[in-house]
Image 1: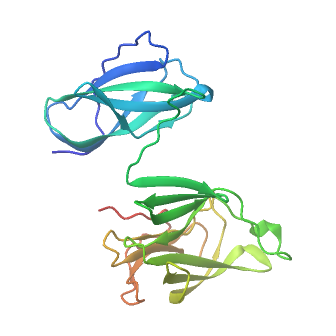
Image 2: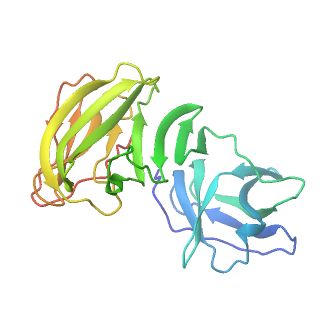
Image 3: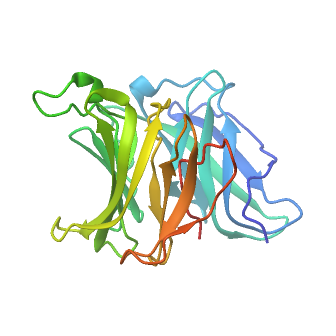
Length: 271
C-alpha cells in the first residue's frame, strides 16, 4: 500500500447547478492508497473566489461529506486535498466542488477536523485539537526602540511546541550591533508552554556572515515522539550550515550533516 502522490484518472462533468463547479472521480489504480495527496488542475473551470469559498465534498451514500482542501494559486492553479484513509486497489471515490457564495444562507463551510489554523496579531497559529503546534510570523516584527530597523524580520516559523504541548523550543540568533550581516552567537532554548522556566540547551559561537533569501536561515523541529530536537546552525562562511540533534535536557548534542559548502536548513522531521 502506498501513500505517495499519484497520477489519477479524473472524470469531469460540469453541471448546470449555479454553485457547483465540477464533479469528479478519483481512481486508486492498481494499488491500494493510504492518506494519499491528490491535486487537480483548475485551469478549465470558471470560478471567482471573491464571490465565496471553494468547498470540496466527497459523495458517500448519497450524502456530501466536507473534505478539507487548499487552492494553490498561480499561472496554473491546482486544488489539493487528501484521499483520506485507505482506498483499496481499483476503487473509485466521487467528489463535488462547490463555490459557497458570500451571503448565502449556508455560508462558508467550516471544517471541525483535528487541525485548526488561526490568524492573530500577524501570526498564523497552527493547533492540533486545540493544542498549539507552531506559529508562522507573516507580518514584519520590528526591533525595540533605538535599534536600527534593518534588524526587522518576517516570514519565519518560531517557536515550536513539543508534540505533547508542554514545552516550547526556540532559537536566538545574535547579530553584531555594528554589522547586521555578522552572526556572532546562536543559542537554543526551551521553556514551559506558559513561558516559565526558560533554559539554554546549547550556545554556539558562529561568526557567520550573510542574511539569506526567505529569512529561514535558522530552523528547528521536534521529533514526533518529543525525545529529540533537530536544528541547523550557520557555520563560518557565507551560506553554509549543518544540522544537529539534541535531547530536550541539553544532552546528546550530535552533528548529523557534514557536507562541505552546503546549506542545510528548513529542518523537518517525518513520522
